[in-house]
Length: 221
Image (cartoon, rainbow, N blue to C red):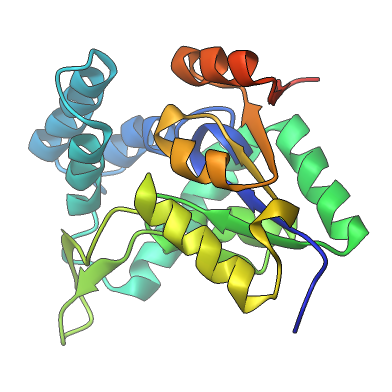
């Protein structure tokens, strides 16, 4: 089925004002969903990545290990509870408005996230977004998650490839695509779409957006 346009939305820092892992880390540790040692490693790796001493992928791989030993049903229920209690109130008003705008126009709308798909499913449901592509994680034959990534983290070139695949699926040229994100890691897809939008951007992306005349959207318009 063809559509006239498509809009891609990043998840962390775009649809949400902040990073979902940061918002969920302390509650998850307090609830015993993440053990103290892994929780400390998760927070430490995240802080090191912010300081440039670890990569964003390093921090994400530690985060994925938090899923180990649980079934997909269990993980979905945990994420539903975290969304209801911590993430729903962190949804960006500006990003919500843009999702509504595209849906009303009849555009295809999709979330492309480096997080695991089940992490973003509740916000997709909340916003009425039917397409969601995220980083795949490995499940054993028993149905329990290993905490390991299956393939590449959906970042950079991998997110570009996912965007192109969806656009082709719906018969939309990339010149008719819009991409909303907060992070410079998503530059390949930003450069490939007809309408790149920086949402509450980190400083490196904001500098690029200003230099290229891209739209900058603040979370609280």
